[in-house]
Length: 525
Image (cartoon, rainbow, N blue to C red; front, side, top):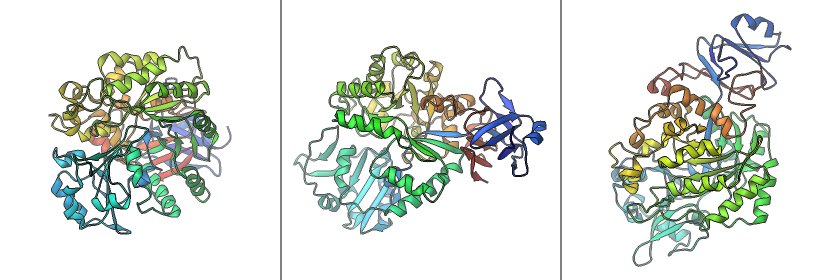
């Protein structure tokens, strides 16, 4: 063997490779793992230019993957004042009074629906705190916003609008906008009026964000968007720097997509850089429970939720089938039980699929009945879920998510363990900026989910697999990623605790001595 570029030693290595479950040292060359062995093997791997890193007893695991994140589009979503710590209306008003203005605007994000205490969202609730300033306040789910009266005027929004996809400019009985905008098409009405960050500023923020992700152990991320000038931004950043996290990006396919658009989505799969590539297509089958746009088998307590995001669900199915025939995998946002069922029905109608067929996956899956659990494994559909989302619910079901669904469906919250027990592939992620990107928090909340999902956690091994081997399966990369084995990509994460044996609290605060992405050290404590 030629001398390695990097040798990692002094670690308890959890390989997740059945052929060799544990080791003491790993050698890396040209971005790949070239040797896995014992401490006694290290000398023969080294050469005069080999870098050796002693991990001091840390546990080395396959590089952690965030299987659902928005680090590029999320730069826009996470603009302005972070409201994630706000818990009530008084706190919201106080935060808005002190919020920084950008070109005279108040931009804010991360606001929990529960902060309104069950009140209907209306700009009148915050106008006093804004003192007449235009404001755009994103709710935590990323699917809705509250905007001020001045912002509505600036965007020319004076009444209800019609949309091709499920979306709504909420209006009062007199037809006047309340400031509550539900779903992407409605929020996009604000785009032309909002202040924008410069191209250079966004590039700097992207590098800073990815560095922060690497510091929590993240080596790669499945990015569930690719819009606007994202390709140009990634190429520009890579022109002068290395991405600290490798990105796999999935462009959106929205209702109304015709043959030309589907061909464009197929063609863009060829795009890539050094540490990013396009892989798959993202769909939306519904919206969110709190916004009343999750597609449910039976209406929620407000009488909402009985319609799909695609007004013609059959058109969604036809688009998935077209992409499948072209060898393109899909990831579909499906939160409600009817949405999940329709995606599974769509994949089942594809018929038998052989080795090498594209992987299809469902994102979020917040409530699903017993009769659907076994279908994931039987149909080969990967479940992609985000344990940190459980923090927005409460064990007593007094939160907006649970109240909307009612006790029966709320009792089926985030069934990660049930899906694993049913044999499903289960990839785990954060959905940043909807929840914090910290990979340790993803692992910790997978072990000990909060709120409505409390008491139904994964084992330590299941949680680790969700960020490694199962994430690789969900991306169709199981032969090159997700394990520490010769020939696999050198994505590696060193943790100060053993994530398989540690408690949730220990994992949440664990030191991260080292992260490697494609053989490059992207974080060193």
